[in-house]
Image 1 (tube, rainbow, N blue to C red):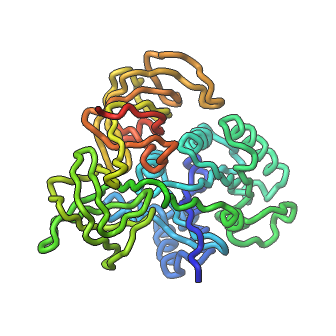
Image 2 (image 1 turned 180 degrees about the horizontal axis):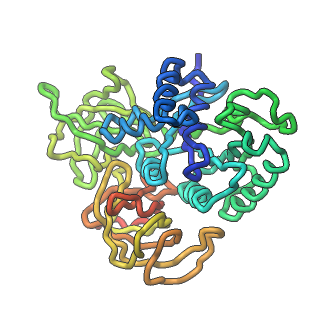
Length: 422
C-alpha cells in the first residue's frame, strides 16, 4: 500500500468564526478523534456551560499541553482523506497562529480560511489571508462557516463568496488557487458528510476539497539543509545532533559542514524513532552521529549541509515583512528577536526601503521613517551575530521568519536576498 501524499494544513481566520470547531468536527467526522475522547471533551465543555465548544476543546487541550512544554508533535493532529493525509497545524488565537505558521517545525502547504456567513469577512480575515499570501501559501480553501445561522441560504453564501473573491484577488490570489465551500461545523453539514441541507450547492464537501489539494514534491534534489534543534552527548556514542531534514538527502559516510562555525565531520549513523536509517529525506526528524564533531561544535539554530554546498551565512539580508501588531511603531534601528527555522537571535532593521500596499503589493512610500501594524514593507536587516538563512525563493523552509518582541509576534516575513558574510 503506497503512502498517501502528505499535506500540512493551517486553519486561519477571525477569532470567533469557528476555526477550532471546524478542526474538531473534521477530526471527529473523519474518525481521527475517537468517540471516548470526544465524550470527555463534551462533558468538560458542558460542565463549563460551553456545550457548543466541545470540538473547539480538541485543539485548546493541545494548546495547554503546548504551553506546558510538551513536545511539538503533540500539537499537531493528523487525519486522512480518500486521497491525501493531513497534519493540521491549528493554533487558536492570532499570535500562536503566526508563530506556528512561520516557526513551527513544519510549514503549511495550504490554508483553510474560515469566515462566518452571517458576519462575513472581518479585519482579521483579511490580515490572515494577506499573511498566507506573503508566506507563500498558493492553495487556499475558503470555508464559509455557520451556514446554519443563515438558514443555509444560497444568496448569503454567494454574497460572502463574492466579497471574499474580491478581497483575495486584491491581495494577489489567482482564481484557480481558491475554492469556496459552505459548511456548518456545529451541525456537521458539508464538512465530511452532507445531509442535503444545501441542495443548491453542487461542489465538494470540505474533506473532498482538501483531497483535491496538491501535496508538495519532496525537495530531495536540492542541496542538504538540516537546521539543528538539539545536540546530545551520548555515552559511548559521542555527539548526536538532532533536527529535521528540510531539503536534500543525508546518508551515512556523508561529509558534512556545520554553519556558521564551519566545523566539519563525517556521518557515522542516522536514527529516527530508534531505528537506523540508510538515508534521511525532507520531513524526517533524525538524530545523527558525527565523527570529528564534539557537542561544543554544534548548537540549536546551526544548519548542516554537505561540504561541497555549505549553508549560507548572512552578514545582512533584505526581506519582505508584514507588521501584525505593535503598540507604537517600528523605526529604523529597531532590534527585536527573529525566529528563523530553529534559530532565535536579535537582528536590527537597518533600513526601511519601501512600504507596500498590502492590497496590491505596489510601492506606497519610499524610505518611510517607521512601520506600524498592518504595514507591509521591504526592509534591510542585520543579524547581531552570524546566522544561517537562505532566500525564500531557493529554500522556502529556511527563508521565512517571525519577529517577536514583548512576548508577542510583531511581524512575519520572507528573505528576498542575502549579503553573505565574507
